[in-house]
Amino acid sequence: MLVIPAIDLKDGQCVRLKQGRMEDSTVFSDDPVKTAGHWFAQGARRLHLVDLNGAFAGVPVNGEVVKAIAKAYPTLPLQIGGGIRDIDTIARYLDSGVTWVIIGTQAVKNPAFVAEACKAFPGHIIVGLDAMNGMVATDGWANVTSVNVIDLARQFANDGVEAIIYTDIARDGMMQGVNVAATVALAEASPIPVIASGGVSRIEDIHALQAVAKTRTGGGIMGAITGRAIYEGALDLAEAQRFCDTAHSR
Picture 1: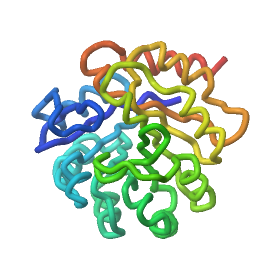
Picture 2: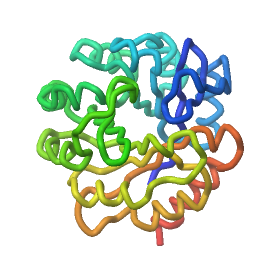
Picture 3: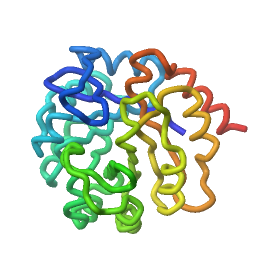
């Protein structure tokens, strides 16, 4: 299982939000490229980038920062989400050196777009499903829909999606622990591998997810995204990844 550092971009800075609220942000760095290098040096094998401004605007806003990170660390795989609503945006990100793009809001509003994107860019599409009490939220989490997260995930089973990032909004940035039960339920219900997000705040969360990484059915849990915890020192990235590697080799 991969432990994936998150770099959330707002106005060109590296920040963390609480429950997706733009007005409740903490700035951790004004140099996201340097921050990416720090996590790379700590052993990160993938970075999770989010264009927070883009998620609300519906178009990329921090694209140049993402491009700069990709250029600075060409061997570090990147996944980017936030404001990705059309094929041209996907193409531009992939051309700039990003490995995977994350379709979130558009996956909810226009599920057929996911199939179109997977066909155009096989192997490079991830779906981001962010949920509040099991219901999917869109537009930077500003709108909670009546769409059940598991029902929606099943719609993408045959599209060629590389992974589903599942975020429990109520846990995100709150340092309260990951929602293991909901993550496992999604991983067992869908053949697509799941990446856990939201509340991954201590080594015990990594232990709990690694213990159920291979689900009885479905695609299993392939990774965990962590943000505030590694910035504040509550979780050691290198230690967490070593644990996952050791557990996997047993």
